[in-house]
Length: 278
Image (cartoon, rainbow, N blue to C red; front, side, top):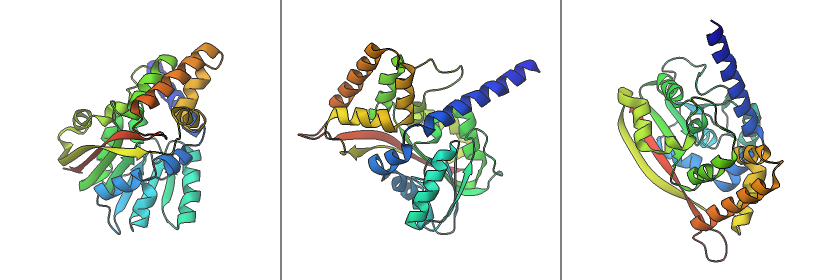
């Protein structure tokens, strides 16, 4: 019994840490200023239609949920971090989108079996620490014949490589936590969903990022806006040499991916994955 209680407390502490990390900085700005089109890409891939019941898991500030609502769907956006949901509410109001917002853990969704026609996540559920429980929940709350749609950063793409670059500077992950970019590998997602889905369609695509005029501008933007990057820098804040080394490593990463002539232009790779629940 004591071991079970310890496990529950450890999970609560981990989830609290995740909530705090994503509340750092300004992720809603990242979603709207850097990758605004990705939500609509996922909504189109899922073929969201008027009147359908849609759940956006780890929705953040609604990058996919809001386009789905504007397409006429009945949308519920859930996320572990209430600060992101509040930003999403304000954005939805400005855009005239009506949808429901609810705090929820992707690994234990508070919804009924088969409640939704489409269950989707845009670079969201991939960051839940335990992949199999999250995948199980995606399947559980989707109706038979419904759509499961995911858009995830790949390990080999820019964001996946950014996490690889930051890893030596970050605290060790808790036992059992899996790297988020694994969700960007088709074979990993297929293994998680297994024979519970059919009609799988998976493509690797890229999104063009051209808002940064130089690699250092990217680094400074993510140091002040992106929760995971902020958290890593905070963990080494008392070591100026390590801070400077991480600055150099992130600048070099951006230079390696820079396709521009004058300003910085990068193509960030993601996996677009859709399937039907059996």
